[in-house]
Image 1 (cartoon, one colour):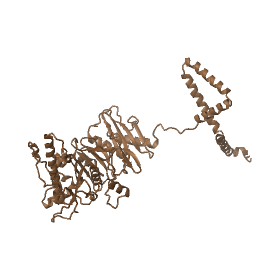
Image 2 (tube, rainbow, N blue to C red):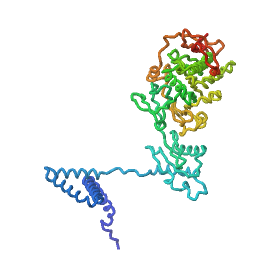
Image 3 (cartoon, one colour):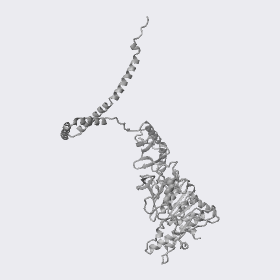
Image 4 (cartoon, rainbow, N blue to C red):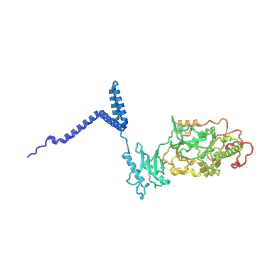
Length: 561
């Protein structure tokens, strides 16, 4: 018997059902698009009704009667006003549409990628924050990371910008090595190329890691709002200092957080030592200090590198000498030592006689040395005195004589610094890329941030005395005679330079014939009626002062010949 074929409706039923579902879905989507405003209004009316009911339930019973009477009065007033019902209906519909609009859902937790990153970071910390004897470990493989990480934030790229970690009480957070291991791990796992700050709260057993923003590099040299005896070394994080100064940043004026170095008779860190790699910005720092010191003081510059970076200061008002040769440097530093002694003796005599200190004693004298180690090698080869040995008196007694010493040296020449230099330079700065060990060796303390491998010129760390280690960005102060300097920065530096000498006689100090490359003769400002220099030892201060003529102001030894 031949088999009869199935009815057509049964053979093609699946295709018809599928086609019907597609038609129904399309119709539903079209109806949803058409009725979307109505759906929004209905949703809003429902939310308004729920909100009104909640407020009515929360209202005390003794206040429901007055509220009901006030509502009825409002309805009656709206009904009696022309076009009142229509306006009320439009208002209600508008409020319902606003209330029922679709909102972007607020994230209440990390997404899958961020959760995986936190989980990986938690697992990496387990060996450091757990012990086998802990009955209820906070960190354990496969444990709950929510209990350990009670605060976190991510940037747009999904990288951590802030993390708060709770660690067990038995962790040795008082040991620097233990803290360094944790900081290095968090730094590595959270992403390289950024600078992190770690805040340890030993009492609460919490560690806060924060990603720091880059310090601005667009602030150029300018006249900063400071008091006498204050020098702006650079700028740091806003939460690191409690002071701001207005500065020009391009075409705008902003408030920046300065690192202010105070010098003078009441300063606890009267001298500065800056260390860095070649091209890191130590010369820029010295040049910036010189421009600020020239406002109310005299400056002596010794350029040990001999690169001519301070040629723009030569012959300017207040600049007593700019030397780059060994002979001129030795003569200038010897004069500075005699001048320090003269100031000490004159100030002591004035105080014993009950008179105020003379004005020439109160005028600050700045001794700026850039790479003195190079001159020390030349002096040792020639059998002459090391220039740093001539700084003993200015470094030891400079604070009382208004004499300030600033030295800039490179890491490879730190062993050439004398004990007097390392003892009396209590203000320290490290510029350029450096390891934590190098920073700690210079500043005496580790920074609370991770030093980035690549930094712009003038970027580093500073510590004044026993204070905290601060990040530092030196204002852009390039050599105005350098061809690579931009016009804006060149003009900014030239505007701060004082005028040339006009009322004094320019005397050139000849270079000895037995030296290496000849040094450019720099005019030295001296008075025409100057008397010879008389070297008076510091011990003479203890001798009882006798009436005599005041000592003549000591002059640079290079000009006496």
